[in-house]
Image (cartoon, rainbow, N blue to C red; front, side):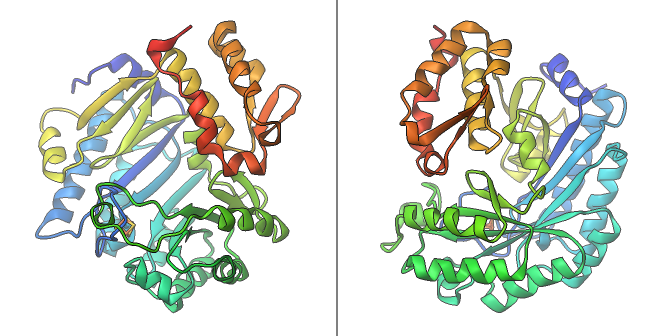
Length: 390
Ligand code: SF4
């Protein structure tokens, strides 16, 4: 039997309905703004990754003594579509060997247009994938070039159309705040994408991570995206896409079940280099470096960091994550779970929010569209640490 620190918490987490995140740490090239744990693979790195991933999932399974029951799977990255069809076969095999998929509700994979092929789509359909998230980013060739993306508009359209034609639920990522991107230009990308008919849209302001290339050599032309975001909030509901989370819009009922598990504090088993997990109240991160990750698996699972989320910090996290979504935060439930002191503290913070930013319906409080636009400023009041319980 493998030993895992804090085994009681982990065991508890693994015994509940589980969401599994698998991180694929490879891309065809590195985008200048990106600091995700990804690199262009060389030598036998993909083989090392797959054999390590197989060992990691086996270790977790053997630790619980039976296959954990999985509700959602999300294969993200990085760029999972850089794996060949043969490598995907290996991935599917290790998933079915390690997990009970009898109650699986959603199986998502991320794909980028330049590496996605019809063979991927055929295999994914065959092996139970239900949802593909396509990294479109823009439908303007100049913007895609500026972002350092390898695909053009034509290929992005092909990718979305092919996923839809193959019968998948389709999500598409789009970015705003790009060089020279007027709100009119943003609207052109957004409306062209809407016309293709994806079920779900994820919209992101360009964020330059400090550890990325642009973090060291900043581009001069990035824009503030407040107006772009506001436009999307006005435009998309008129096209049948409801905003159900700060960055997410979906047709009725087509929200991401996997992401909802993050926002509602569900159990998440993260696999792969640099993957995060949350099991039984413990958050962990795996070793980021592929060599370290693989090496660590000789002894046990590849944890590099663990943290127990409890007390005020847990209450803070519950409140912020729930307020990210249009489902909002149930204050009665919060008081039940965290006690009157923390509940009063929360009410005090909410009372300080501008009234145009929150709305109440019975015990449920949620952000208005304006609240979602300035959410980052609102979170500051809700960031409580363990040490400042009062
Ligand atoms: S933005 Fe996406 S495609 Fe570009 S390097 Fe990062 S993970 Fe890879």
